[in-house]
Length: 346
Length: 219
Image (cartoon, rainbow over all chains, first blue to last red):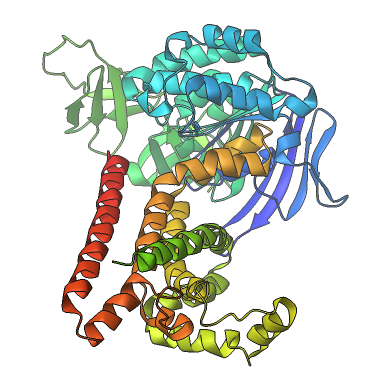
């Protein structure tokens, strides 16, 4: 069980250079839009042909420039969930699913009426079977796309921003549902997203991408805990990043936060140029290491969080109850434990 | 009243629309997939008949299809039939003139088509012909039908190129448009008016059909 992707492709104004390999079955690619994540997915599916490199899944060579191997997308046995689902607009839900069975006919997996019936039932689509995609709700559309993709038992699933076309209030519920379906199906998948919560929740191997390049990869927990670079820290959601002057092995001055001095857990080194502090890692306290004065802080209210911007520019997030309408009391000092300070390279 | 011009016009319009339906869609399919420069050149060539005076089209056709010209002479030798001054000569004229209408509307439809649907079909293992006929074409249906109807209406009204390549022979090459001109020229005003009204009626029905279709599409 493993996937190895190592590909390059050059366009006039963009170049893709991706390489990762893992035995994990739950792979995530996190990146901003335009970072090349969808292109990586399309290359894996055979919808885009890379200029160089190879793609190997479970010892099957899907693509290899050197040996001129390039299995057609029809034969790769991968399932692809498109961002906007790409349901065939002139076919009903049932016909969409039948089309998938038809596509796998040559592989000896033609579905009979019973198969179609059981899939419709499994994904809760019996009531909508003769509706056209335009008459479906967001959830039904996604279920139809999932059912169509999984109908023919693909070995590798490629999920391209599966929740981006969905209203925010449905997203979290659907995420849990998808997690359940993926768990049950138990095949390797690559989930592409710009939402770090989604990736963190569903994937245990993570590839971070920026401008066509891989900037970090590894176990999801590990990448979030030690992003290593400024770009990775930003992508994993670190709100506070400052340039530093190194004072000694465990002490730095944060240039962008009014020059406050902070102790670090890890040893600083020559190529460390920045530090990061996650907005949740600050706590109200007057004593301890790394005491930071709040000064005249600004507060803004979100449904379940206070966003506090300190005088020196640091962001602090505090949970709040919805009914909690009292004015937020800004403490005089915050602390941040030295081991929570991320050391970053540029 | 001799209804031959009506019959002949409709026959010519139907046949040329049928030919151009296939050619226009094929050309549109080809052009949308081409790289930019080649696309620009081909698009220009394919659209040219739309802006050229029909007489220029007629002249060029005569240069190719005339009995002493290469294609015309070859056809005469093989089939012992002329390509000009017969009822079917007008098919060449109308086909060239309506080609850009079909091509451009079909191209617009293909450009608006969501390419991901084709990609989705491929990952599901579906072959290219199935994807084209069962997914792509139905998606572009509205544009293609509108183009077809427009092309048919234009074919019905073609005059300039037709008169040059098919002439006007009553009962043989006469179409509605050439008949109107002939009747007016010979001072047969009453009959000319009749044909004018018939022509307006047909064109109005066709355009109405387009509008109804467009409305359905936009809903």
